[in-house]
Length: 119
Image 1 (cartoon, rainbow, N blue to C red):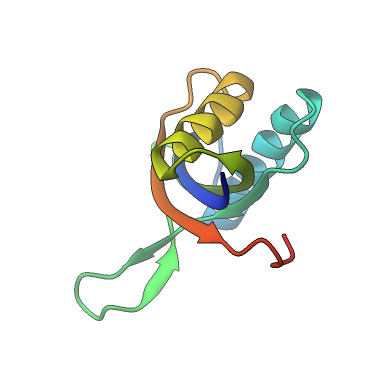
Image 2 (image 1 turned 30 degrees about the horizontal axis):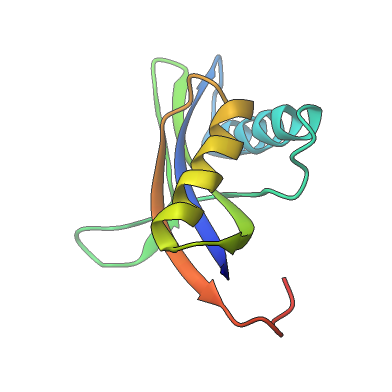
């Protein structure tokens, strides 16, 4: 049995926004609130990064069209005592997916943690 850090990408829609900063703030706040209401305050919520195809520099993963934003969030959680990497991914998706119904999730990274590492 091992411990894993599982990172997932979530696509979050925010309606009636004028700028990227507001969209990101609303998305992170709403996701955090829904997770906390379900007792999942151990899931860390951050805005994702997208690489610019022209220059390669990273920028916040958010796009606005018609006052509606699509914000890419990164959700990270520690999974303890999983049988395998795939088992840890299933646990994480189940935990987060149960709290964030109707939000598309995709596992983007899974890191096996050493037993003595701090979470």
